[in-house]
Amino acid sequence: YIERRFGRSQPDIKELAGKGVINGKGNGIFDPQGSVQVDEFIKMSVALLGNTYEVSKFEYWAKPYIEKAKELQIISSKEFTNYRRAIT
Image (cartoon, rainbow, N blue to C red; front, top):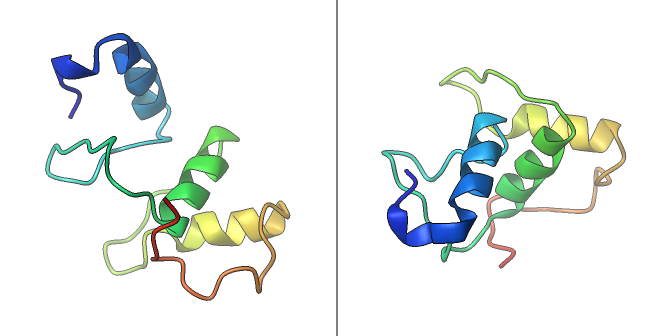
């Protein structure tokens, strides 16, 4: 999902993708101009700390990341009422 137009940021994007921190919007789409949702930001934060999870297709993909963020006290259990809203 990395295109030539990202120029100087391409190595950083590849590194973050290789570590499982980012993985685009699906279907090979990388949208750096798009908004980031709360669950996406939590996932990136937790993955940067070395925590990545295989998620069942039947499970809400962000659930293990949200639970780990609570465990690590990155977020509190009542901090967000909607994890699927845009934060940017």
